[in-house]
Figure 1: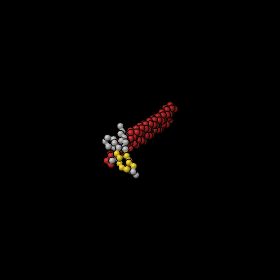
Figure 2 (figure 1 turned 90 degrees about the horizontal axis):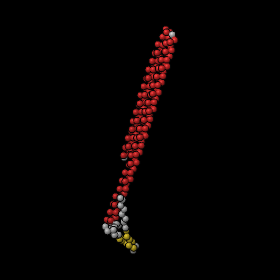
Figure 3 (figure 1 turned 180 degrees about the vertical axis):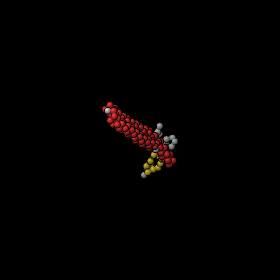
Figure 4 (figure 1 turned 120 degrees about the vertical axis):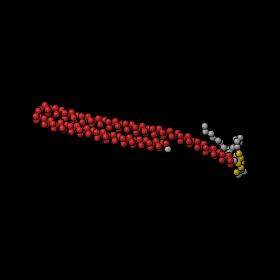
Length: 169
């Protein structure tokens, strides 16, 4: 039963880990999109101002606006790349946690097997003791001195029953 509980808990941990990973990935996607939208809005606003200034001040402002737009685009891409890296790190951590949980459950299962074997041997020994007691009561076993009992005759022949007692240490 302990192994079942450990497997159940391992499943719960895995489920929670997957849920947290999914939530974290969704949050990171939202933040990346917000950063991209903000950068795009900023770049668009800068572009519009540049358009107006270009008419008034000439090519100098136009060059600066192009540089600002490029810089904003680079920042948006950097934000998206960072979000992707964080998402991958989260997936890796969830995978490691799930593997650890699985190994822990398997270890518990192996330990439980040893306990079951010892318990089986004890039950077997107790059953043998009970069988010996019944045989002794019915006169089929050995007396306390280890002497054999003659139980009767069959077809004119005497029959003798012996009991071998096995002791587990």
